Image (cartoon, rainbow, N blue to C red):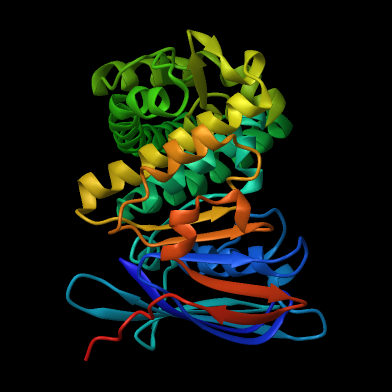
Length: 378
């Protein structure tokens, strides 16, 4: 898939902007704060309906305005689709071919991106919630029903936590009601665990080879750390362990008003040479681990969907030496549409620059040089 064009209204520092992209390589060059990263963010929001940055949706609206629109024309193998997202103080609405999609989960996974952004190093350094979110997005863009399961689980989790708090106050448990909630959460958890274990199995099957091409080291894997202490998907075993843990932890959960067992407390551990990269890897090594993971995501997407997502790279080359830069570029095949930001074209391989459509940004103004436009299908 490729994004042909992007139209922005009141997004970040852009009052209005219209861009047409090359089907292959697009480079946005500008000083920090000029607005180049905002273009990538807009594409990301158009795909996933929320920003990769921290903050609320309304922060995306240009200062002094009340609402924003992001519109994109996306090409697939033999058809085009128009996507639109509108955000204001009160709501967020999404459209495909001018038809409003009522559920956000039915919109996501239609137009897909894979990205490497500056804060992605938090995948290694940050909290477990960041890693769970990355995992959910990676699976969610492949399987639309996965996000529905996650949303259903979160709704049940909220209900269970509220009931536990009431139990702590009243000191009386309706065991049948709690059993119903527990049973529903276990069944939804089984579906989520199935997706997570299988997805990580796919990632781990290709991650060592990618990391070796980037660094010369192939001893890398992602360990899925659950509080069930399981290392593979086993439906009967997971169900049994969760039932026992719900029963064993009830008193403690009532005191805390929190559910202590489940997918909402799981984590990913990146192991290089059997050591936790969060503790033992340098920041440069962590950056390369994340890049390798993102490339693995790209290739798994291709394997399952039979096409590549759009690849967003925000200033990815500036802190990487030339050798590893070139190793990354080897993965940028012609059938992948790449959108890159940089402050200096010298950070990017000359051959890549020659093939690219160049967008120069200064104070929110965009000038275009070179590159073929995406052709709109009739």
